[in-house]
Amino acid sequence: MNTEWPTTVEEFLKVDLDEWTRRIVARHFHPETGSPFWLARRAKLPFDPLSITTYAELERFGPFPMDEMTSCDPRDLVPLANPRPLTGQIWDSGGTTGTPKRLYYTEALMAEREVWREYADHAAGFEDGKVWLNAMPTGPHFAGTPPITAARAGKAFVYGIDMDPRWVKRMLRQGRPADAREYTDHILEQIVEVLSTREVDYLATSPALMQALCRQHPTALKDVRGVRMSGTQITPRMFQEYRDVVGEDFIILRRYGNTMADAGMGLGVEEDGEILPYRTAYPFTTMRIVDPDDWRSPVEDGVYGQVCVTVLHPDHFLPNMLERDEALRRPIEGWPVDGVANVRPLIRTRASAPEGIY
Image (cartoon, rainbow, N blue to C red; front, side, top):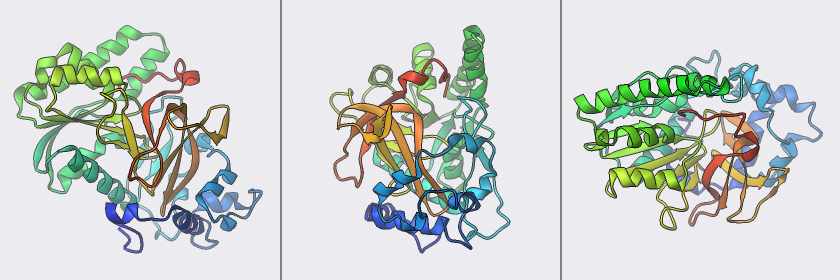
């Protein structure tokens, strides 16, 4: 990790967001060492990006062109200040709405995501050196990497399964719910086989698979001590359903995000489980909750709106990504920026973008 930038949670939370915005924009638009993606667009912008002085001014970029993430070279998003050639893996989105979007993670970006993962895990009560079952998407999907990264760092022992989340979504889009259920059963069988034959402390999975496991194989979780769930939605009703099966001493950690952005960490619940809040991975990720019909207009606290995510990282600049999710705007005490709560699919996209098992 580059020591010119903050490297610990304590340093992250002290960052002034306006100053950070200026640093990130200047890095990505540097005429010689900026990112090819943004340098190619500089002349087309109706303003000088280097005139940006505050976070609020990022609205001038407009909504990020998400459709271009399906065709652009992911390396072009990384500043030329990072020596070429770049090496490593390209990560895919789930492809819920069509062709997958692809992103390249630098070593620094991977390291900072890991700092926030450890922070959230330890705050929730997970311990290092334990045994995990990683029941998350595999292959090109970044969602399944945290347990593996922890294992490589000598902090976990990990079992895994095979999972292709796109297959279930394809079955649902084609009106084949029986085939989707059969594939879900195939995933559950893999999970139950490991849990019934191995000593496993913690489970990493999606909210939908955790719900299916609680309903169809509740006793499989009897010796597990906690679950980390990553994905785009979990409702208060689902959360209570988990609690009814696993009990109050079982650790339940929620994470909201996707391949483009490590958007939020769920630490605790509020109002008897009716509010499930998330904090952002500040300052690298910020979230605004906006009017779906006017993305520049934020909603009031406690009101549902569309999630608008901005990534401000030395190696990635992705301003104003309008997600296919909605959430409550939720100020988080002691946090530099607003959080969100009770994330769910945006009403206008629910029918066309099935979630499936992830």
